[in-house]
Amino acid sequence: MSILDAVIMGIVEGLTEFLPISSTGHLILTSTILGIPQSEFNKTFEIVIQLGAILSVVFLYFDRLKSNIELWKRIIAAFIPTGIIGFVLYKIIKHYLFNPNIVAVSLIIGGIIIILIENRMKDIDKHKGMDLSKLSYKKAVFIGIIQSLATIPGTSRSAATIIGGLFAQMDRKTAVEFSFLLAVPTMFAATGYDLLKSGVSISHSQWHLIAVGFVVSFFSALLAVKSFVAFVSKYNFVGFGVYRIIVGILFFLINFGIIV
Image (cartoon, rainbow, N blue to C red; front, side):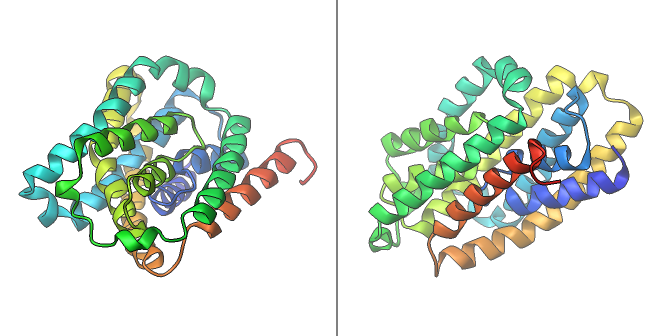
């Protein structure tokens, strides 16, 4: 992996982490297109630079997070199911599921689900104004369980939590913001655990690449978060569903040599 590769991967991560299109899936697909092998280091790189994007949420929502204990209780309640499942299935996920074909299938299936849900929940925004600090623990845990599906690369953590939020009767903007906030403990835990398991094998030059991807993902995520909130305040998620399907199909065509 070169510095340019790290910059490109950082941009892709930052722009896709909070969109319901799967940042991990896009990183895997991007690394495939760039000819970067899915080595243990590259798998760790793809996970660690997500932390750069997550820190953009801490930066943007710091005032809201620093003193709202009730909100933190809901966030932690939602995080617990994903934390348990991610810990139990870590080896399977890391060694078997980081596969471009699995990503493509997940993108297509997820896109279809998003479109179907939008068509069945057209009155979502009648629930505007939900206070996340008063979200029931039952609904918080439910969203966390749905988020655990995102352990499959290509599913999208953001898409899973947003869909869970919609079923929990949140409006689109509130579901998106809860997805942002839930990303903080989820990705800190995922990054920390992955570094604990594989950090000792990372060389000095590789840490340099991680630092570049980390910083780039932070700044590109700042732009993505602000733009996404503005977008969902006016529009629905159907476009993201269509995008996922197109990307999944295109990748299959590229992967099997139909498109060069």
